[in-house]
Image 1 (tube, one colour):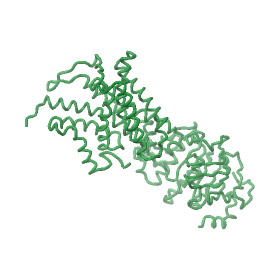
Image 2: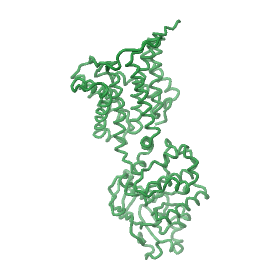
Image 3: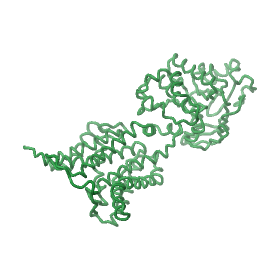
Image 4: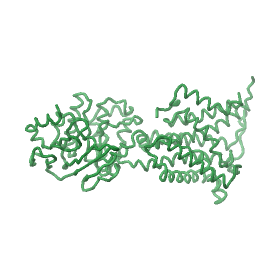
Length: 251
Length: 291
């Protein structure tokens, strides 16, 4: 838990995690073709934490996740995961080290049925959730196994996108805006799921626009703006930082 | 007009044989296009290489038809994978035109080399002894080898369809056709899959070449003549669908055969007339998705 951490408020990237650092990003810069989107991102995530990247549209949150996953045009700087330098690794190698990615657009495949979508990501570690465990978590999916992946509702697609990476045994999940465009009741269900995953020891890096959703789940927050981390604080300091946060996010 | 059943069924048989080759070739083209986004103009050349490979195996190494049926597609498939690794790989993300030009150039070079050494006339390749002779079906005489070609390509086509549409490996392939970046981010080695897919498509063409060697003789330009029709088949069927390219391949072979019987003058153009009609009505092809 992050309760005991020392924080120097207002200093970018100064929030420090309590446990062993699982992911450490240092001075990450990234480009899409000619356009320079990340200008020196530095932050870290400890094992067992839920860390949320907050920020406005286009601030660089998704690009940060894509850079960690190795699916951006070009990246420099240091990214260390679980003792490995992954700043130059290809995305299939990164996935094999135990990072699982749930993209913002969900990435459900139209030419695959629900079962095939669910079974698509290969197991990278033992100890992933079994199908039974997944159906306990997301009962809707069990009834729709034969449906075409993209015929599911938005909420079901999001559940499928999360469910399929839980099967792989990866213990580090990157979820990009899992609540985007979903009904409140579905958002609540996804919130319960993330809380449960956290209690089971998963480490989660979350990108969210929905601040209230993130507030209930995260141990720590980082604020991203113009491709940089401009602030960071623990959830215990949330109240004290509310005014600043409203300014950052423009809400 | 009275129908001569014997002549009609003979033309239908020819049509089915051609349809077998169309299906095997357009199936490979569809698989390659889906995964590599390349319109493989070298497909006729690798078909020819399959036939030559069987010829060499027999005349240089004394390896007969049955082993060649496996060996030739594997060897030519390996050749295909090498061209993918060394050349096609670099075209990823570029316009279709580059892949088309490169594979067209490859086809010209390969066919030129074979023509240089073997001229344009055909080399004989005997029907294996087990498949010689024929069966009198009453209404027609069926040469056993021709029946074998139809059955063999049907089985291979359906097996390929099953592999792609019903297995886990096929799910990887379909998913990677849709979104290769995400599939790779799940830990699947997509570049290796692309290489193997090209090898599979090329191997299918080479298999068609081996099957055709005893029927059509082994000629450097045997593929160049065939591939034009096969591309028309692919346009009619649409690039997006595996089953679509199989069915269209066989159907157009049959339509050609029927045309040869009822209106022989049009038999060489009927496929292209159909292509124009389909393009006018449904530009993505009968079963195709927009690309």
